[in-house]
Length: 242
Image (cartoon, rainbow, N blue to C red; front, side, top):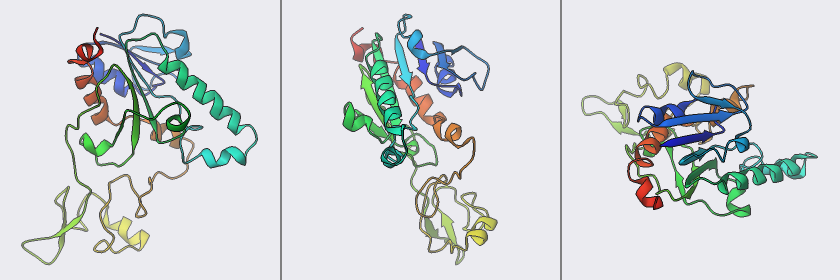
């Protein structure tokens, strides 16, 4: 199967498909982070090159709900949202039999159409929470492969301490958070409640501001990439009727 992974520089999804024996290529304006089949160009220039499946990750900066409030405050930003939506439309309308477009919760749902599925990394063995929407063409919704629960504390049978329900370690030993983290944040781990590893106590993503934050936030979790490669190539062609 010929697979195009649009707007990907990391190579994570591309390599998941290549490991399954498929002719997979990533495409982005940026060079790839890991050696492999990569097209460094505008993906719209290669949409008609005979792909069987495309998985697209359009930039979410001007689409996600967390940033839309800036559209009325910063001149020119609203126009960028319209351009981003037009780019998404071009991906959804590409001449490719099977298409998946991935993005966080945002205005694609209200301006184009609602997603076919919203998934979480913790459905696929990743200790993380991040609602991710999928707009699908001739593809089945992804099935969870390894659901993990949110970390929480339970009483240890052999002492008065508590154990993490995911990693099994005692509160101050568990890899969820090193003891220095609890001390620095002045948080009592016994009363803080459970959360996934990528979350702050308030539930937000804990990645702080940095020049590379957008790149780190845009990476696909390997567990999700593996599920795509497994489920969208074994039987997906029957679902698509091709």
